[in-house]
Image (cartoon, rainbow, N blue to C red; front, side, top):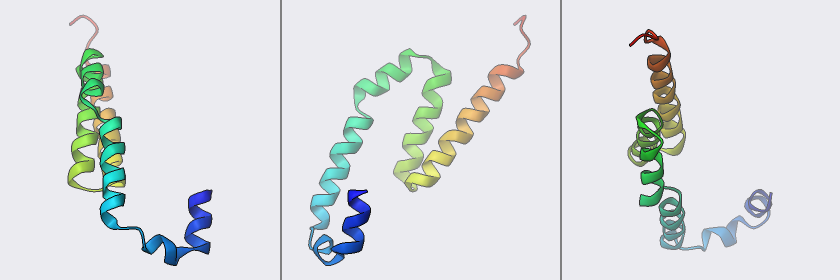
Length: 90
């Protein structure tokens, strides 16, 4: 809510923020969300959890946030479908 109000009321002041400062905030936030510990935890949960996670992270890095999430959801649906389409005896 604060961000939306700031964009409407003080857009000139927001444009004075250096892009390098915003980039630094994004890098720190991204590091906390996808740190090596998170990769290890996802790997420990199994390949069916790790593949969609990895696909999402890579897609976000090479495209944008929305497309990365869509690719991650599609990968997750594919892994889910593959896991549920195998016969039980094997």
